[in-house]
Image 1: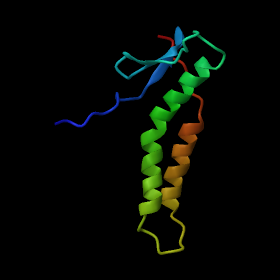
Image 2: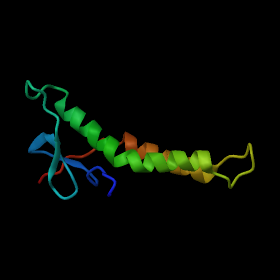
Image 3: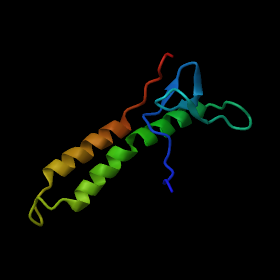
Length: 101
């Protein structure tokens, strides 16, 4: 039996429908409108979801590297793992851009 998985990324938002979240293949995977339609935070909610999905793997890999790094002696800095963690954090803190299509 195949293990279920989420829709592959990267996910994105389009200018025309900023409440819809699209997968890499162009199909919509989520609609973040409430039962009352759009509210001021709807577009920001969609952006946050996209950012979380698109950064998840990088952040997990960086954290696992930090806790599993055996290349340093105890007490020594783990520079490569720290650099990877910083890059993942930078990716997670950048505002996503909306595609025009």
